[in-house]
Image (spheres, rainbow, N blue to C red):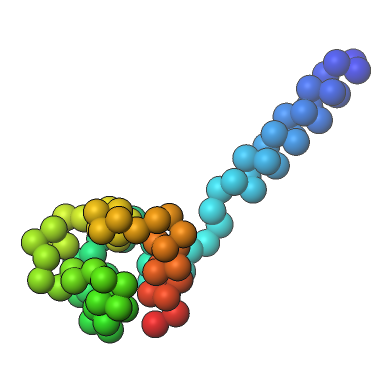
Length: 93
């Protein structure tokens, strides 16, 4: 009996941990590192200004159609911290 109760408690604890790891809700227009550059620029032309300020001239780049924000930033030598700051700026727009 004790063994069953312990395993049930353990299962409930694991289930709660797993449920917490699942994202509950995302903003519909939230910009993520996985967002395609072309999608970003078509949804919000003002984002081009923020990208230009960061040294990324994505508007005229042939790779903008296939790369996401994170890939483009890495190609321009940006660190993870710089990428995160750029994403925050883009979401504040």
